Image (tube, rainbow, N blue to C red; front, side):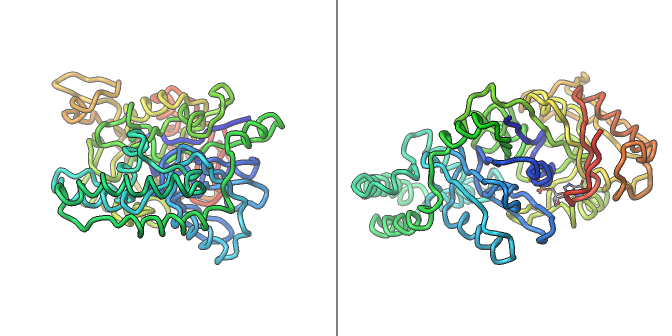
Length: 424
Ligand code: GDP
């Protein structure tokens, strides 16, 4: 049985917590796209952790954590992440990295920085983890697969031709120091030695696991609105964030994905540039940011303050539809307990017309939120275990959102810990 856990919005919906929770009953957890550019924050009995590349199942000793072919693999980052867990008492996780995954090269990170610098005020707000240059090279067929680290002849030739090409841009477009092929080759030898113990044939491993009836979780990074095809292009990420891509990014048949858990946060937040219709500013935003998540809404990778907004029914309905949602996990609801009234964006007004269908980017830029206010519940709902025990206005908020989304909210998260979950 394969299940996907994915985001409906801009990311940071709390997928890490939901995956960590569902991992208790899973055998294998797979990261299928993205790289170290976003992070999941997880709170469990070992402490509080920010994961960037490792799947959120690494804390259980009964699971295998898989980094599949679709992921941008930053080898030193993975190795440091493994070390940061074991240093804090987490048992050595079982990890497999796909031999077909590609490597984030040191120059991808440099090009990411240089391009953002060149764009100046028109920059994307990249986390400068090298993700866009990495995927550009992958699809231009000039990337390095992990398997190539083990073919010395191929590797040394490819390093020379790569440096030749990159150096033209470094010299003439960016006016920055050039790459030295010998130095790059040396770095790649170090990468090879670091990653060797973990490399395997992931799609074969998953194929056998499916045949044996194992439970596999596919863990998505970011959310629908950052998908390069269906999101707010060009302010998107560079690999597909949809559950459907889980099949490709993990190398399994699409019909094996039986359940899609789409995570939606009870309010909105976003990082990076791009239209954000229900965005709020000033004191109202500062208060929600300060109270949000677990210790404030600040990026897990960059620490930068997230942009804040009210729940956006239009974006979230679209987000759930594109994921192929079977279940919605509605998270961080406890944070809204301070509000007398809770504003919700129920439609967009574009050129004088109202719509509840998410528009293309050019129209999105012109959209104004149509706000409806729902009564607050003004209590702390943390610790509540049963749906019936939630305050009436809180249940009404959930049910209103569910009616707008058109997908069943089967889980409500009322705190950052594993056990803070209400099943409906
Ligand atoms: P992800 O990238 O989708 O996994 O999301 P992040 O980890 O960036 O953001 C979620 C944040 O909210 C983390 O700090 C979590 O510990 C926290 N969190 C998750 N679920 C809940 C919840 O129900 N209530 C509260 N207060 N915090 C939560």
